[in-house]
Length: 58
Image (cartoon, rainbow, N blue to C red; front, side):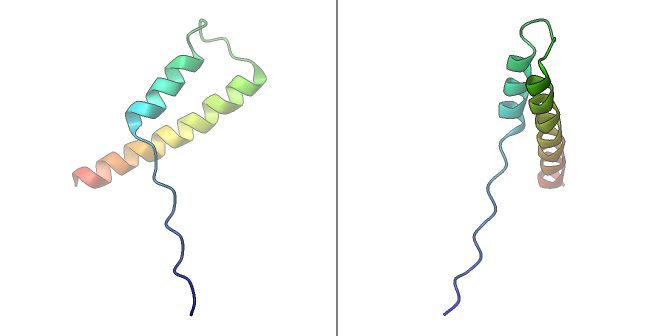
């Protein structure tokens, strides 16, 4: 019997992503190359969370 597909991981809330973005920028907004990469990843996650909020509201 085939196993059902695993559910995709639940997206983090917009507030949680915002908190992590703010934490990265606490030191005046100057980021290391690794910090910049993480910031870009968070922006993608943030945009997805915004889209999710709009979808749920509709």
